[in-house]
Image (cartoon, helix red, strand yellow):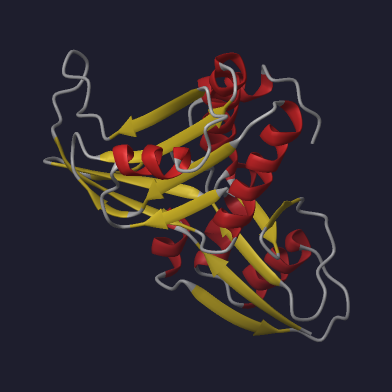
Amino acid sequence: MKINILFFAGIREMFGIHEKCIEIKESETSPEKLLKFLSEKEQGSWIELLNSKDSIRVAINQEISNWSDSLKDGDELAFFPPITGG
Amino acid sequence: MTICIQKDLFNIEKIISNLRKNKPNIGAIVSFIGYVRDFNKDINTKKLKHMELEHYPGMTEKTLIKIELNAKSRWSLEDVFIIHRVGKLHPSDPIVAVVVASQHRKNAFEACEFIIDFLKTDAPFWKKEISDQDELWVENRFEDHKKKASWNIKE
C-alpha cells in the first residue's frame, strides 16, 4: 500500500522535505507501526522522530488521529509539532 | 460564513461592513484581532525581527469550518468571518481576526472567544520566531489548552 507522508514546521526542517510517498508490503499499519518500520529501515531523521514521538501530533487524511489508528492504502499521513497559531 | 488563509494584510473595517451588508437584523459585532508581539523586554534581551507562519493547507480550512459550526450549534449567530495570515510577518502586524455577528451581544462575545480559543489549539498553524540571536519554533502554551478545556467540550 501507498502512504503519502507530510511533514510540517520543525519536523519538515529536520527531514529537509515537505512530502514523501512510501510504499510498503503490509496491507494494514498504523502511524506508530509505520514510524517504527521506517526508523529501522531508513534510520536518520526517522529515529529522531520516533524518539520525540510523545511531543508529536499525527493526522490521517487531515484529521487529528491517534498513533494506533489504522492506515489504509492511499491515506495522507501528517507529522507535526503541537499547534501554535493565532 | 467565510474562512480566509492569506499572506496579505486584511482590512477589518471592510470585513465588518461586508458582514453587515443587507443584514439589518445584526445588532452586535464582536471582533478579535491578534497581532505579532515584540518579545517581552522585561524578561528577554532578544529582539524579534520577524515571524514565519506555516500551515497545513486543507486541514486548516477543515478545522476552522468545524470550529465555526460548533460555535453556531451553541449560539445563535448571524455570521462568522475567520481570517488568518501565513508567511512572513513583522512585529505589530495583524495575524488573525475572528469577527462574529449576532442579534444580541452576549452570543457574539461568547462565540468569538470560543472560536479563538479552539483556533489556538486545533487549527494547524505553526509560528517560527526569527530574532537578532536565533530562529526558534514557538512552543505551545499550557494556558491555551487550559482555556480550551474550560469550555468543557467532549471530542
